[in-house]
Length: 132
Image 1: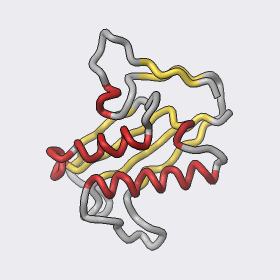
Image 2: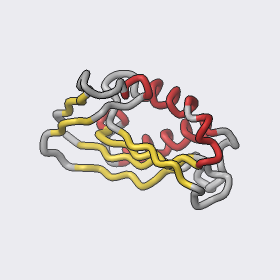
Image 3: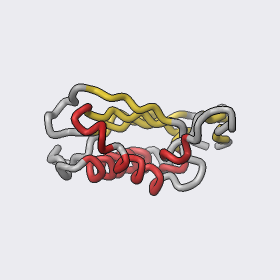
């Protein structure tokens, strides 16, 4: 897979927040991952905290990608839905993204929402990856 992230100096430094401003991806097969919450196989919420839920949600993203034969390194876009009740605690999500995508992080959009499917869910993460 040919993937080049874009972080021009003419826009703010998104890498500091764990994502890039854009990406150029050569033609490739795509893997689309449904929104993943921080839950286990029994749909039990991993933790009441935002950072722990974000970590567990990315674990689930990684599991789905593994089933397609790829991993987080092939992610070309993320979309994060974060509950407005924790909008002042976003640094925990930034920490997770910076740890999981230390080099050339994918572009991402963050959407603040009033709630998710289950009231205890604080974050839902969708991903798109490109296969070789």
